[in-house]
Length: 282
Image 1 (cartoon, helix red, strand yellow):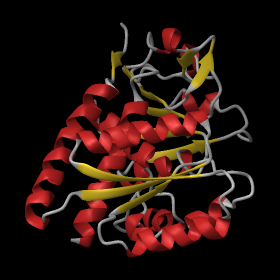
Image 2: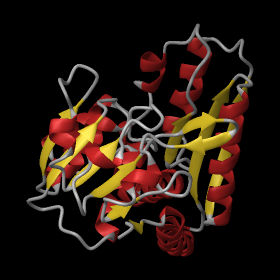
Image 3: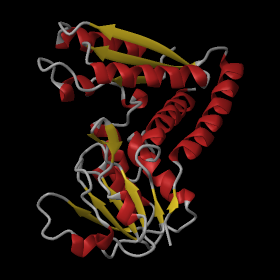
Image 4: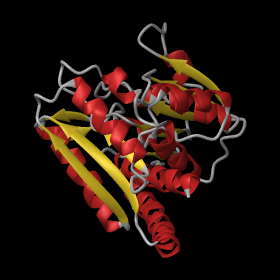
């Protein structure tokens, strides 16, 4: 029996509809739209596409976008000065600095100057720390989307055996914490894990985020498991995930496709973060 496909596009559309309704209500109450400032430094092609998609998503869902496109020659000090101005701007509820930054700009230093209350990406140390402590915060968008995808199956996270393969600060670590917050028993595997298959085969929920095409095959997955593929790899011009979809879909109970699974959820949860930030500042 083939796995049921978790349709990220459909779930993301539902979340965007909720966001739009909340944003329209905010506009009626306050006489202005919720605002997101997006900063792009340099002319990286992929970053330009990502920024355009985020701005379009804002415009489609009653959120005002403020685009700041800066030359690659912009200094770290100039970028920090702009962030400070946006922190003080009452029309800006969320700030997003598109990564990567040019090599002469220290990413961690720049991001640390964004107000935690306006951290649209949920990457700041303060927000990451609040997630670890279980305090309300703006959390990383992709991990939040992953939790929504899992919940959409109707299966309980509470008490489930969850395995996360990958320990990045952007996906692996916060996903593990969110699963723990939802009362799963969580194991995190990474490049130094000895024989991670011993863990993946027992996972009720398996999240794979390592950036290696086809890493997970059917024999590595528990029958009926929920499999969330975060991988975005390119081969012959096509996107593919970290999971061998053909073999795993014959074993798993639920599976996300690539594309169309986790990807659409990231922007949807970004919009949700912006609304959350605005409501907290209202």
